[in-house]
Amino acid sequence: VSERLVLITAIRKDSTTGYKNVAFNRSKKKFEAKVQDGGKCVVLGSFDTAEEAATAYARSEYGRADAAKLLQPRPAPTAAGAEAIRQAESEGLTLATSSSSSSGYKGVTYYPKEKGSKKYTLKVTVGGKMVTLGYFATAEQAALFYARREAGRDTSDLTAPPPAPPPPPPLPLL
Image (cartoon, rainbow, N blue to C red; front, top):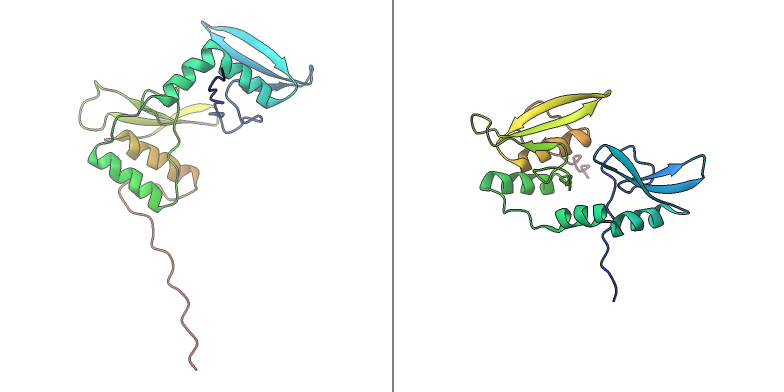
């Protein structure tokens, strides 16, 4: 019986292995799969390749729980959320998903008790400090802002569509 494993890609941009909970141990010259459980570090094993370590994590109870979160169907977005997804696609951006976020998107947190209509907060770490980038009506709008920021686009006006492409050069006169 073959098992269906989901190798979970790294959440952190500075990951050198590309896999969640997999790091290279320089002193052992091995890749380690390890997790935090109740404040304690649990080493799942040392391996020759990052893929082997990622597979060990995927087979563990921790990896299976992460995969289950990733495979859960996301609720259908609201009209405003669907518009943010369409906007991201039209700009060639990908909304960064996350299995560890309550909203399903990287850096986006849902606060149901927040007053007003903007219940989603986007936070990122800058220079080792947590910084709030904004408050949004939908998780998708916050994820779009994050994607624009990661792509180096202007994020000063959250509602503005992206700038139009430059016009083509004029055709030479014959």
